[in-house]
Amino acid sequence: MSVVVWSLLKQNVKPIVAYSLGTSLYLWLLAALYPSMMKTGLLEAKLEALPKEVLQAFQYDKVTFNNLLDLLGGNYYGLIFQVIATFYMLSLAARLLARPIDNGELILYLAAPITRIQYTAAALIVMLIASTCLILLNGLVLLMADWTMSGISIDGMTLLRLQVNALFLLYAIASFTLFIATLFDDERRAFSVAAGVLVLSIVLTIGAGLSEKTDWMRYGSIFSLFDTGRLLAGTEHLLLHLILLVLICLMFSSFAFISFRKRNLSI
Image 1 (tube, helix red, strand yellow):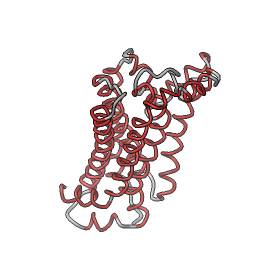
Image 2 (image 1 turned 135 degrees about the horizontal axis):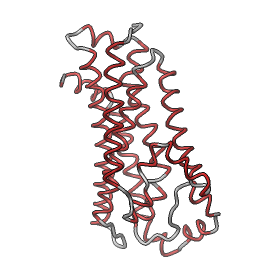
Image 3 (image 1 turned 90 degrees about the vertical axis):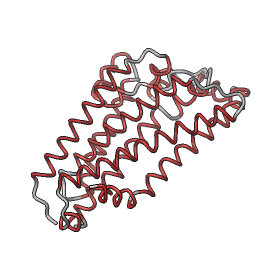
Image 4 (image 1 turned 30 degrees about the horizontal axis):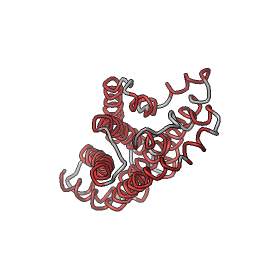
């Protein structure tokens, strides 16, 4: 199976590198701009002028940034990260399973002594590796910024909590998108269904921040298990959320294996 993993990894190295480097360069840019942004105070002034509900909807829990992670909480690890995680995993699931089923490429793998279980496991492993690469490179860039740039202070434990929670969120989304990809022969349908569910989760998260009356909406979203504001404040139930994300990952991974093993393929 290692041969299949390596083959799939080589085929998908470009999007993995693109997402990992792109997000990391964005973080480096924010880190480089942070000292000057704090001196001018323009960003804080603009955020303070916005209604509280708008800030909450877009997950700006703070308008005063005491350190770089406070800035990143709203400018990366909030809504932006949710959108990136959604489309990163959607694109990989499409390339690894939905597209090969749709165009018949998968028959080349299954004609070899490779079972459906092995192929599904290989695709899942590649998605987990891709998730890990993005998070590791993001964390490394932030640590390098902390070491090399003046005027930046990053608390190591807070960064670790953010990174671990973000990684487990990506794992859960990866297993979900892979499961959806096993259900359809048409790549566009698989992409649309998975994207619809994940975009709905983002909308529920935004809606939950509009007022206290709509706070219940966050419980219908997987992104409620990655609450940046509480992670930064140290009040998040991190262990509970990690356990729930692991359970979600295991559940949808199991569904993916069962679904792909039992279904008929029109290839």
